[in-house]
Amino acid sequence: MNVGYSRANHKHLHTSSHLRLIDRLANRLFALHAKGPHASDRRLLDIACGRGGPALRARQRKGLEVVGVDLTPYNIVCATKSNAKPKLRPRARFVVGSALALPLKDASFSLAWSIESPAHFSDKLAFLREAARVLKPGGALAFADLLAVDAAVTASVESRLVYRDFLETWDVPYLETYDGYSRAIAHAGFRLHRVEIATKYNLDILRSYCCFFLSLLQFGPLYRWYRRYVKQLTGAELDNVYEHVRKSYRALRGGMIDYGLFWAIRS
Ligand SMILES: C[S@@+](CC[C@H](N)C(=O)[O-])C[C@H]1O[C@@H](n2cnc3c(N)ncnc32)[C@H](O)[C@@H]1O
Image (cartoon, rainbow, N blue to C red; front, side, top):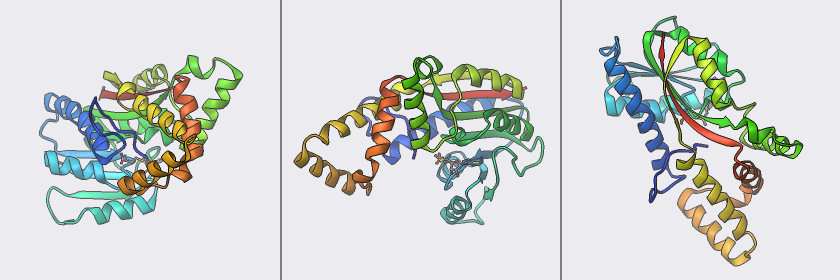
């Protein structure tokens, strides 16, 4: 599932919201790279690349050679298939591997990103250390991730349970906080360049969708109409997502989850 990025009047939870997020992260990353010591280096590493969409977009938009690494072999098969012209230059290559032990040489890239994936990693500092290892000094890293809001999560026993349900339904081991990431970025050997808390451009929209969905459930005929509409639009089966929506809504309504975009330079 991708969370995306949308301003007013944009369609959300649609391919376009994921593309907007990728481009927002990418534009600042590439601007940073252009001002850095490796501006002529045209290779991008996508850490936890999924099925290859973001990396192939970077190749198409910026003419970059891309390498994607992902833990899930099926995603690498899909990414390799999406690369319709494998001989086309610049090359796109997808390999199975963990973000916590990248199958890549030290200082072999000057550009890297990880999009809506770090939440899934069991150790965020290990991910940042690996990113630092494979980047050259002066190289640039960007990532987009869910963040835990510590004060809201730890406010009561009940809020801890709501947070635990959120982690379970999103299938993530834990979420880093903003402060935790700021420390880990420095410990791993990066200088934090910029952060954007983008919650109002994605999670707040998601929260209102969840609220709408849960309200509709009270009105049978309306819900059935909406279910048909979503099925036509996205192919998704709404009946299957009730628990996910309910648990997500509770944590989002409680202000427990934020969303951050980070840009950092390898020291
Ligand atoms: C929400 S998807 C995002 C994929 C892609 N970045 C995108 O934006 O389309 C999360 C991805 O993280 C991958 N993943 C989870 N844990 C990982 C790990 N330890 N190392 C590498 N990939 C991992 C999953 O296989 C999945 O493809």
